[in-house]
Amino acid sequence: MSYTVEISQETADCLNITVMKSSLQGLRMDIANLQYRTDLKDYEMEDLADFKQLEQAFITVIRYYTPPDMWHLI
Image (cartoon, rainbow, N blue to C red; front, side, top):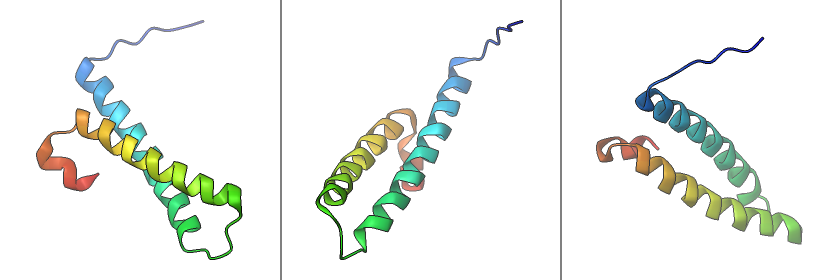
């Protein structure tokens, strides 16, 4: 049995923002865990660089869906 639920575009945007902010928070925790270590292996240094790029990408997308007066909360 399947159901179809229709939601407004505004609700869909809010849901997307919530999911992206949650992902961003996890990514920032990963960055923090790697950033303060002094014994990073090569692949961990690559991960850290990638994570920092992803962080900026998430911020860009979240800002697209967020009013400028709320950007300080990202």
